[in-house]
Each structure stands twice: as C-alpha cells, then as structure tokens.
Image (cartoon, rainbow, N blue to C red):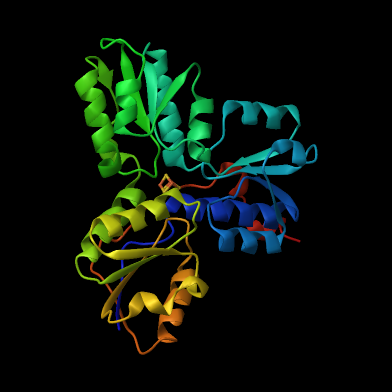
Length: 314
Ligand code: SF4
C-alpha cells in the first residue's frame, strides 16, 4: 500500500504555543497548574500534560484561590477573565493570537455602531469565548438557511467575524448570503483568519485527488479535524477520522492502493506515526510526503514565561 502524508498537517503555531505555556508553567511553578477546558482538543496531548501535573477543569470555581490558571487556546469570555481576577488566580492566557485578533475585530465593529454576526458552530468553546468578549448582543449564524431567518432590517449596519477553524470555503456561502440580503455589511478579509486551517484544508483537497482512502488523525471534538474529513468525503474519497492507530479498521483498505493521511491542528505527529504503524500491521507500506506549503509561523509566549527556565527550575 502507498501512503501519502499531507503537507502541511498536524500542529499549528497556536497549539504549539498553548502546549508550551502549560509545559513552562509546570516547570516554573511546579505541579499542579490548572487548565480551564482541554488546552487543545486532543486526548493524547491532554493526558500527557496531566501526567506532568496539569489539572484540567471546566470552570474556575474548581481552581483553588491564588493558583496558576491557564486559559485554553480557544479563548474565554470576559466574565471568565473577571472571575479569575476576583479569585486572585495567577493567569496565563494560552488563547491563540489569531482568536484574540477576531475578538479585537469584533469589538471594533461594535464600537463603530454595527450589529455583529459571528459565523461559527454553537457550543464550540471558541464561539462561546468570542461571544463573551464582545459587549452587547452577538448573533450566531451557522448556515446559509439561518441568514434568511435573521430578524433584522435589510439596511441595519452589520459586521461579521468568523470562528477561526472554519475556512474561507466554509464561510463563503454564508457570507455571500449575508451580502445578498443586507445592504450595509462589512467584515475582515477571511483569507487571513487562520493560515493553518486554510493550509491544511488546501492540502487535503489536493491529496484527495491522489488517494483511495483518507485518514484524518484527530479528535471527534476537534472542529478543524472534522472539517478535514468532510473535505475528503466531499471530494469523493472514503474518509475516516481516527484518534490513533487503534481505531484503524482493516476492512477500510480492501483493494485500496493509496491511502492519504493528514492530521488536525491539535493532533501530535506521534499519532500520525501510530496510524502508519497500524497500516504496517496490515501489510507493507511505502510512505511519502506530498509536496506542499512549508509553514514557518511562530507565536510569542506570554512575557511572564519568558524568563530563562534554568534560573527558576529547582
Ligand atoms: S487552528 Fe489557527 S486559530 Fe486555531 S489555534 Fe491553530 S493557528 Fe490558532
């Protein structure tokens, strides 16, 4: 069987930064440090950090007063920031800078007197965080059909922002529907919402032309991983989301010659290796990587964590 790995795939700069923040916090402060929500949507990443002493909580009332609390890459609402301050927590914010950028854009539109529409998935922590970062009402739109149901006059001054793990292609239909219905609507250039989402989706679209089966390594609650699998399916390729090699099923590969593998932005490369090993257990495989975009994006760590570790480690 031939295996072609997508390029790029796996960890984005926001995920690398978030994991590094928890790692450094543990080394600087010692265990435990508390992380609100899964730091990124991946069980292997979370389990690994848990073993090192991170404690994952859903709400801040589970964090002892004065302890180190880390906000996940998805961002949090203002109420969570205020709660943390009131409890005297030592906060490290691992919100991805590209998510923060969406918060800033949203606030600017509202300050300019526009009603804000957020294009995203209800219940996703990033969406909850973004809604909670904007003063006033934010209208969540998840589909083109919902655009028609918005109870707004056609000439209402509007603006839209989007969840980062949707791509230009995901949002295009909804934005077009908004533009058709409303006469005074503005929004950011969606091409630069998140380079990682865009690049991984473009790679999968290209890879899908060359393979019989697509495996997406990622978690079921990872928005961007689900989207990669959907893109494979939309391209006419049998596509499966797997957390690791244990979920690979032999029957998917009957008379299959070429398998494509990609990984969501929160899936570690070890899990890709683990999936390749599972394929090797089925028979000989020849692994290559597609020619693709090389990413060099890096995000700065919070300044509190920038002291040389050696000076603070015991
Ligand atoms: S997928 Fe994009 S927005 Fe989300 S953490 Fe990664 S770089 Fe940031």
